[in-house]
Length: 43
Image (cartoon, rainbow, N blue to C red; front, side, top):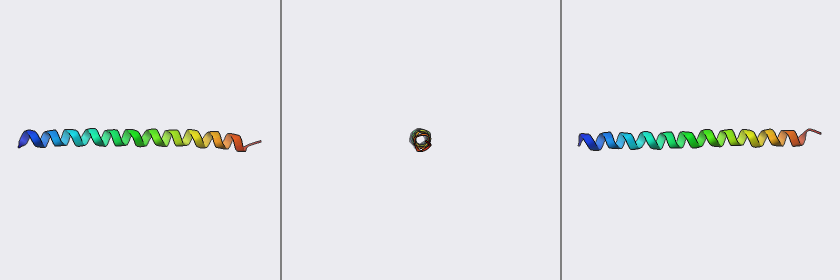
């Protein structure tokens, strides 16, 4: 039971890190796109 609990915690941490990493990547990418769009908008 103890082992299962620690395993679940480990998996949860991995999932959270993965989700957080993807979120950061998405935000970073979105900022890049927005910056490109503002450059295009300026004459």
